[in-house]
Length: 73
Image 1: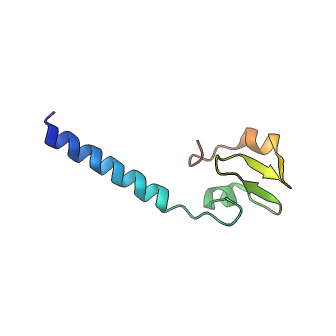
Image 2: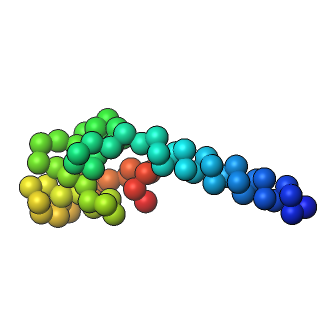
């Protein structure tokens, strides 16, 4: 593969990743539309910056165990 083609492919992948990151709809509790659709988001439930789910400020073991949100890997 030529250097020009490799640079072009890498640039396209980078731009698509940035668009995906910026297009997420996150509320004030750190929950996105995927969490609301899956029923994880609710009263007193927040998500930390690393994707950990807290209920009433305490670590929620079961919600973190069943969480399969692809945007928080």
